[in-house]
Length: 104
Image 1: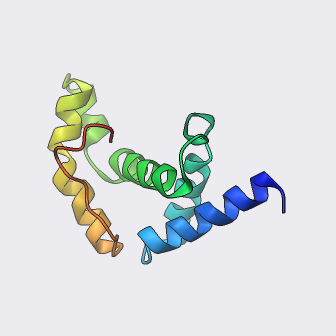
Image 2: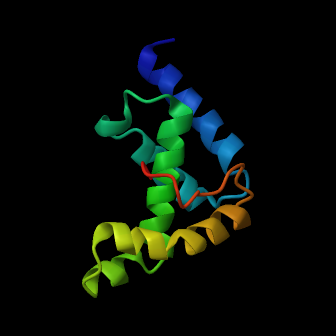
C-alpha cells in the first residue's frame, strides 16, 4: 500500500471515529479539506479535526456574515463557537471545540 492510499484510509477512519453521524456530503468535503497540502504533515486525526471545524464554521454558522459585517477573524470565530459545537453534537462528535483552543 502506498503512502497516499494509507493516508486516505487513515483519514476515512478518523472521520468515522470523530463524526459518526455527519451527513455524507459534509464528510466528503471534510475528507477533501483534510487532504489539503497545508494539513499533510499532520496526523490524519488532527487534519480531520481541523478540517471539520473549518467546514462547519464556513458552511453551517454565521461566520462569513460576521466577517462581512466587519468583525475580525478572531472575534468572528469566538462568536460561532457555540454554533460549531451544536453541529458537532448533532453529528455525535467525540470532542467539542474548546474556546481556549487557539489553533482552531
